[in-house]
Image 1 (cartoon, rainbow, N blue to C red):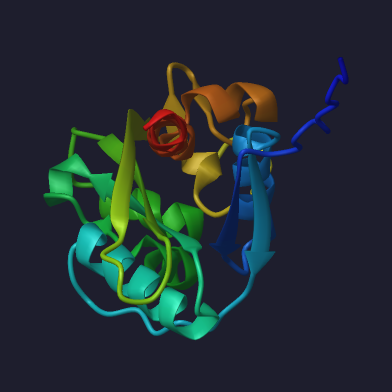
Image 2: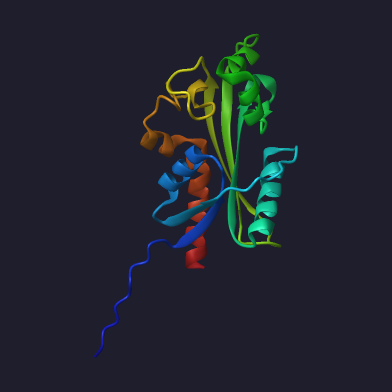
Length: 195
């Protein structure tokens, strides 16, 4: 009786993560691999104005059309509760214009420094398919900058006593908004494998 040898599979799924942000790519790879192989491609995508979900869905559709294949896109927002969710999906532009101290100054008149870090991933198997959304939220607060300032607003977002910038990367990748969203993506892929 002949035996069959099967080569081990390196990854169950492959996603083409559309990003030009090396820090985001590093985090996504650290969270998803080896179960899901993460390839990356940078595209200059126009971002519409709208809710975080609308922005992410539109970006995903555009990317799938340009790539002509499966894509994963991400959009992150930082929502100050005292400002009814602003800067929200526009945090990238607020951060570029105001910096860490300027973002703190936005809350100077408020006692409520609480905030939500929200990450929304959209996955599309290709053009013509409606993207699926996977969202993660981490509640924290805005504080004066602490820790290395090389990754966006990590130095001013505090979760359970530490800013994201102060956290060990492995720890951040188990509590962050990005981790929570990717955990949902992983669960969806796992379910797809069994159906």
